[in-house]
Image 1 (tube, rainbow, N blue to C red):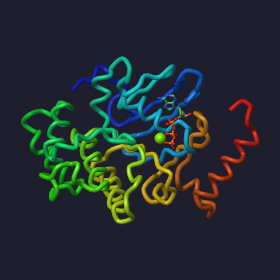
Image 2 (cartoon, helix red, strand yellow; image 1 turned 30 degrees about the vertical axis):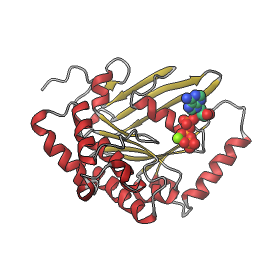
Image 3 (cartoon, rainbow, N blue to C red; image 1 turned 45 degrees about the vertical axis):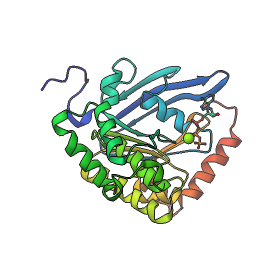
Image 4 (cartoon, rainbow, N blue to C red; image 1 turned 90 degrees about the vertical axis):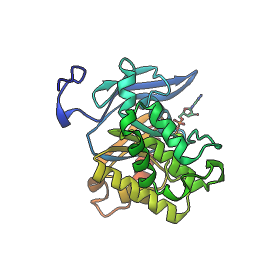
Length: 260
Ligand SMILES: Nc1ncnc2c1ncn2[C@@H]1O[C@H](COP(=O)(O)OP(=O)(O)OP(=O)(O)O)[C@@H](O)[C@H]1O
Ligand SMILES: [Mg+2]
């Protein structure tokens, strides 16, 4: 069982390791030297105002776009030089999941399982399990285009987990869902982490959601880290997340232009 490509063995390898990450889109500096590590099994809320760089970071972590500078390792694998292995270790729910409206949840998840190289012998079981976990069993044979937004979001989640990745990257997984669906998706994410041992990085603008499921918060602001703290530390003083963030963001504005 030698894993030549990983630097350490077992659980000490961070699930996500980001160092000096930078991304420029022409003149726009979307990320400006971002570094953090997330350990196996952690559920981390990835927050920040619109345009802070959350989606950009997630796209780089999942190998969808290249970085301008910096290093990313997923479960010890370099996302640039060891892209295939690194991408295999990650499941990604993008802001807008690329679903095929003519397919059914079952055929789509099976298709994704093939793309993700789930071995043939396990594929049926993997598809079954993923449909079941995401509450899709009853609609498995309907066309995706006939499904409500919440169910389409579940299909997005099902494709992210079908290959049982160590790391889940979820970009606003509950956006546009009704309160009941939001609660169900939250429970599902919590279950994936507690029973599946998966590491979850999730972006959202809903702070109670973060309080409900995350153990740690990373707050981005204009492409930089504004805060990285455990939930216990953050809310230990009896303040709500909203108050803590309002304070961090106003402090940042006051020191705008100074070195970070
Ligand atoms: N393809 C692109 N081309 C040019 N600029 C981009 C592109 N994608 C993102 N940007 C810019 O990069 C910055 C970060 O955007 P990003 O989408 O990562 O933010 P975000 O934190 O996900 O915001 P939101 O909360 O609105 O989803 C913004 O200034 C945005 O305009
Ligand atoms: Mg975004």
